[in-house]
Length: 437
Figure (cartoon, helix red, strand yellow):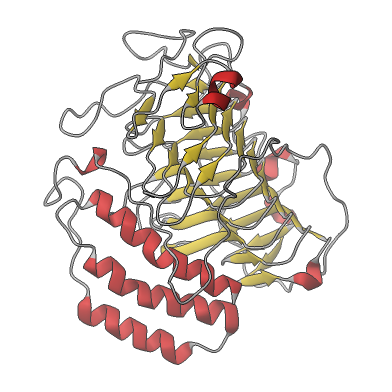
């Protein structure tokens, strides 16, 4: 039933996100339609909820109302209202683990080697299409390792694997405890892959899924890894959550992730998200939603390191940090990434009145300056941070220890963040230090 819990959380994840986009809408249609989502996931996880799914679908069709469309009936200022993250657990089900109240002292790091144990073969059925996005060229000397991530060194290409080498797998797949300690490789998935076991590695794969409430990898177990996979949605569709992380000590490494409403969302502890190429958020299956690159809605420590994250969209943020309800975020490190697009690059917004965002570090990144310029709801080019909570920005670890609500964002020394890849903008700020806003 752990998968059911996750999708109950998804039930309100979208409702909260809808609140941010549709400022004058009560989200009623999104909340009621979640009954359908919940039923479909119960069916996925347990195989015995067909009747519930039909009933929920009926409720959805009876009660939903049409969402407003971007820029029409929605308020013109929804884009810089507070974010309302949408993973909210039902009180009748247990929620994902939240972060401990004390601040851990260590941070997860990517593995230095790849497990080699192979897993049982899944029967082939069909081959999903491969993603087609290509990265833009770098136009300046890199300030951060993440600037070098692109379609040629992540996903299948990063391991020199051809799509023709993969075994197709159709529909939803669950890797439970019987797969503990195994590596599953060379698969081409066309449905949700849920991992509830531990020490499982899924590598050298494709996952293509799409539709209003579609999910790619759902990591519910502990010490699991997804690496060198191409994760995307078919043309004309978007995926709700290409990667959704719960549990402890899970890793997402060197993947090519695209065409998601949110490319990755995490509530996990000791999570590592490293060396991925994340790009081209998409809203084809839900034009009324709003996109993010990575959403950190709970948990920690979380390491976001050496990724290239380009929304290729003018709304919201490449990194959105917004715990709510009983969730907290602690020991988030954003280091060595290239981050671009959105309204602002880093969003900080604690929505839990009894919680906190503690020990946040933003160091050694390269920021692109291509933020939204629409004067009705945007802040203009070169907008590095949206700090709803009025947090202090500090320069040293000692300062952060003294004030864990602050953000370590150095503006001098070797760990500064710099503007990069801005040759097409006026002014051109390539190489200049980023001063947080």
